[in-house]
Length: 308
Image 1 (cartoon, rainbow, N blue to C red):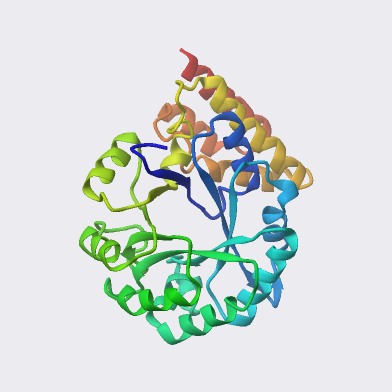
Image 2 (image 1 turned 90 degrees about the horizontal axis):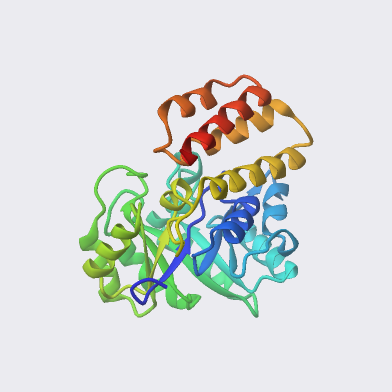
């Protein structure tokens, strides 16, 4: 808890899966809860990796909330019922994914321009007993005022809270945050509001808590991936970062059944956001590595440089 508000770890597709969550929680900790990347239906089936990721047996964090992609009611209902069977009774609904391959099919943030479809979705999901919902959303898809048509519909599911990223879906992660519209949501909504967007460090958290005094919490995504120790009470060491990396590498090696090329690509993708202020020469060597042997050498040199 910082400045009397709760801090949550945001879901980031391709990174904050159960392996990352477990390792981060056990090595660094800090967030009041972790949200999983959205589950979705593809080719009429729930993706196997999403089922694996949401399985309580694969999650050791104290507070974990799975997320489903806002989509056709029948698919959303199937995911909720599956998660309930797993033992989950709190589920987040993603109305914020801005990526065109998702949004242009009336899913994620793309659904925000169709309040009638959102209404049908919520009315379907409220039929499931013993499940509570939260919502993660944008201001709208192509207009920052589209939330005004969505907000009244939230009463259908009575969410425990709403997480708002104050951009439109079309903006993706570009352009300035629209704090005026965000403040209007806070003033118009009686549900707890969590702020998400451009939180890179503790100074950002402190600054936004003063600018937006009415919020109930904040959700940190890429900032926490870049610096996993952001919320630690004690200063992290190079060994801590190395342990996080090694646990992820070993977990993905097992999950990918020893496929070196897949593992190499997976680990390189981590470094697109992880420790961006590490020595440029070391980061470049990691990106250029053509085998896991060369990759491991480059990573070892990077962590060794952090100790100096």
